[in-house]
Length: 241
Image 1: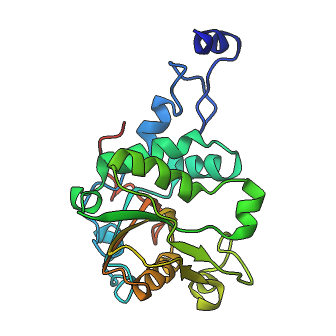
Image 2 (image 1 turned 180 degrees about the vertical axis):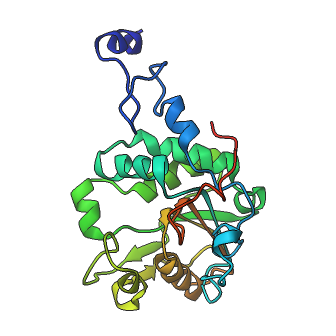
């Protein structure tokens, strides 16, 4: 009843485009949902890039993680949604992203016996500025949906810079990526991040987990950046709650 009354006074709006939504509980409008560039076509199981984009060779050939997957291309409505979560404090979007990951991820990634979710730790400065961590919010909601434990098995050490806005070379520089396992790592891990960009952060996290005892590591992200700006030829329809 209270929700209905509040909706009459302050009409609910889409967290992405700010357009009115039909129901008070909706976080994203139908137009933004339809505009998401789903990555449901053939993708490289190692780097999560659509195969047309991975023809020059898989960039995750030497990565410490075993496989990677993402729900959408980091473009258009997906980019807008991630910006709304990270920079406008639209935290409910994390639940939507987790639901979309759970609905579309290959079953074997989230149905591993004895597996645990581990969120990529944020840069401390970003955590203090935002007051929350997008990857952790997504991982928390995903853990509830997948029925898997969420472990804080990684810590991020001090580094001279953070990844946001860094050049591609800087993102890959090991000097900027300091991750440490916090206690023994689970044998099978689903490493969760919000955006898979170069894979350098995921690789550094996976390497720390392997040194602590992990044997299989799957990297799951909501969005994946592509080598080219156009994504029309590689996105297809997918189920999205």
